[in-house]
Image (cartoon, rainbow, N blue to C red; front, side):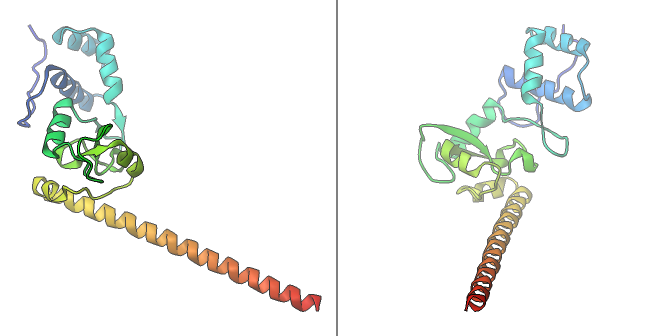
Length: 196
């Protein structure tokens, strides 16, 4: 008989046993900064696994962003659903069934992105590595917009902000280069005048 009652997720996804176990541990992590060891033992007996399995799950799902919010990697069911929705096509370059593929966060976890379907896209590994922690608008943006208009607006806002920062840096670099060239020209003209 189980000692805790585990609420089933409200999403209409079909969770596997491992996903459900991780979902329950995540909810417990929201309640405690550090889960007491007696609860770990109860979890282990309730889910018919060892305590080391529970500790390894906690270790893998404890990813904190700068706000201290628990950001979970997407579940296997969510990854599969995202890949099917995106028709196994990279949403950045358009390659179908790439050799190495990944599920990418449009807004990365470090910028407050969550592992929800409206923030996940199917991507090839080179595009994901190139994007890294920046924000790119994927090809299926209209679908994401229909799923969550507020989040899609945030994606557009952060992308525009990022582009403005890039433009500012380019202008700053060109201005610095202009000043440096002007100083070099000034030094050369003075050197010629002194020499003659």
